[in-house]
Length: 536
Image (tube, rainbow, N blue to C red; front, side):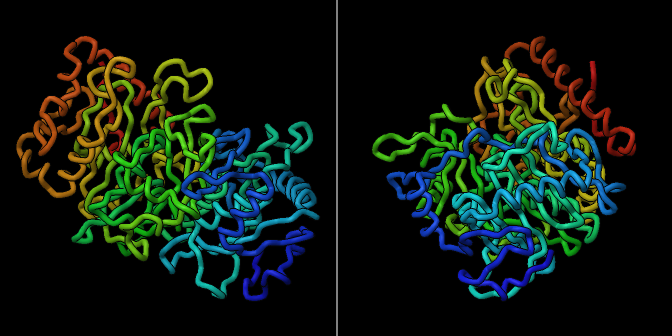
């Protein structure tokens, strides 16, 4: 559906082409006006720092099992169908689209025109139609904001209706909440959930399909920053591994904190115009850049606030997934525009709760592909219902819920780019040391930063050119020494002080890697498979 934004203004905008007849449409409103509307409607409160804080309701995170893609001529033969990419018939989409448009009709709505991709050659123009004003704030913060009065045609539309609930018995979906992507109609409909992350992740899923298929561009669930010499580093990692924290560094310019593309001209470009950071246990001392970005215009989600308006960032009584969204220019040290050169270093971040992976290790191309496809981290007790102790967690390409194609498609693209660019690839364990969760302790942020800085500066290779130790279970090259890091920290085995227990846990994890990889082995070549760990 193509709509020219030049034909629209606050008084004359119409959504009739979408089948929506609204009593009032708020078009591209300033955030401060949306702040006021949220307060008047009891949809949010201001903190002592004049930041709007809202509660997203029942859903405080994404619901990946309720995400669907319409199976049609565009997607049927290309999408990797399964539990992650669940197919749905076009008639199911059409039925729910009709119901959701009827639900939104006669309501006051919030419409925004924006775009994704800082690379102008790959720009994706977007319209969001939201039932809640704070969903519109999220769209303003997270997508790229066009110039005032800029003319452009809308390519994709996202419709967010948290108060609309499907009827699973009649509507062809599993639950009341859903997110459905229709590539033929270029529309995403989201119902039954107020979690704002569904909006941006829907567009990320679209780009993860269209960029590789149509433009030979590798989409990546990663953060990126740039040094004083314009050297680019990218950080892959699942939630809780430190992706946003480690890329937001005062000594380097932030390109983006979550979603990027790597094009054929060896450029890295941000998909977004903002940051969506976790704020659990946030402090000005440990993460000053993120802490200071939480100012008027930002949007806090599901945090606890006392009677004086002070946020308790340590309180997880609503959710561990407390969040903030803000425009990227709220970070002082950013790359503008959000573009970077060919990366010199790639970091795979994992929070290993079993405490067996080295705090940093260097990967060869085969290991890089293997660990990229694996996308390992661990779930801690209490993070999900039924999780009573740490369990291995794998998410292909460090972003399986957003990857419509088979993981090996992205992995083979990454291998080629790594070979062509000569980039260094590192596996960084931001998880536990000295034993597993409950016995050991979390790796200190200052040590992780020191190891990453040494890798980026070349000091790690210089200091250990002939002095890497090959891990006996995972075959990884782990350094014996690193500037500003105690040598005792670099060997996970030594931090345990119990070789028998350490190797038992290490082989348990290596077997989990191998079991997980079985579902990819039929499309993974021998080069990728040679990156696997040893088994006992």
